[in-house]
Image (cartoon, rainbow, N blue to C red):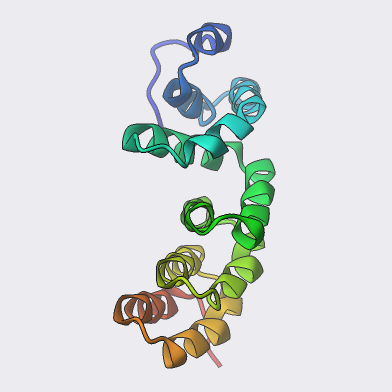
Length: 168
C-alpha cells in the first residue's frame, strides 16, 4: 500500500501524465480518489496497450502496471488480444493477465496453451499458476504431457503445483 502524507491530487497527476503516481493513487485508501485515478488510467488504456510494443522496458513495465490497475476493462481487451493479436502482443497479454490474477482469464489462457509459440505457452502456464484456479488443472496437465519445449513444460508443472485444487 503506498504511503501518502496527504491525499494525491488527481488533477495534478493528470496534468503531469504521471502514470506510476496514478497507479499508486488507484490503490489509495479513499475509494473516491482510487476510482478517479482508475478512470484516468482507463482513458489512456489504448495508449498503454500500444506501449506494450515499446523497446523501452521501463515504459513497458509502467504500461503493464497501469493495465493491472485499470482492471476489468483492460482484462477484456487483453483477452481479445490473447486470441486475436500478433504473437508478441499475445505474449504481453498473457503476462499481464497473470499479473491481474483475474479468474475470468482462465479459459482464454487455457486456450493459449495450445498456440504454436512456446514462449506464449510458457507465459500462459505461468499466468494460470498465478491465478491458481483449479479449472486450469486438466489443460495444464495435457499441455505438460504434450509439450516439446522443456522450459514451457517446466512452467506448466510449476503452475500445476500452484493450483488450489480441492481435496477429494
